[in-house]
Amino acid sequence: MAYNLITITEYKTYAGIKSTNYDAEISALIPRVTQFVKNYCGRTFVDYFASPDLPKVEIFSGGFNTIIPTETPIVSITKFEGSVDYGQTYTLLTQYVDWVQNGDKIVSLAPKGFDEYINGYKLTYYGGWDDVPADLGLAIMDLVTYYRKSDMSVHSNSAPGTNKTQIEYITSSQLPAHIRRVLDQYRTDYT
Image (cartoon, rainbow, N blue to C red; front, side, top):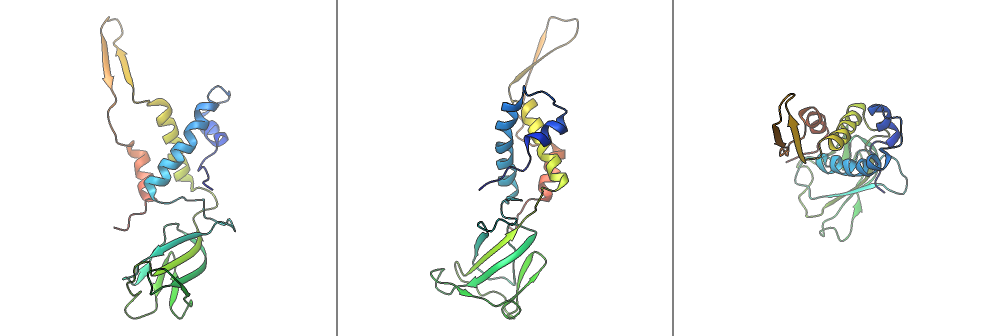
């Protein structure tokens, strides 16, 4: 189940909107902006925090000393398994014998690290936040406002006292810098 990163109540309080006139527009934008932020950052933030029926399962191929899961910070690790038959069967790996958790990383205790096997390691865990971090929440609310105000359409500006109209086309595909700065801090990019 995918969770929205902000609520309509939070957004309306932030934007100072007291009426229900814009509820349909805001309600339509919040899940879309949420999905955009999750895709842009490469993580879900709250979806895998602690729901007992929904742990995050990730498959890794090894070849490194450490494995970094997507949904950080790590809340708890349910199991970490290894496979030598390309993921057809997995065997439970033992914590403090085969691996150890070091912050948000899984570190191999073998001198050569995790052996490289296609689909060789399966991590089942919970991670993310119970509540969206405040700076990220603010960036998301600013992004909702950005999409509400900047509809990428033709804008007409006319100078006072003239009968000439100047047309401006909004064509930038860049996020506003203050929003991008915050999102980039939460972006997972291990390449």
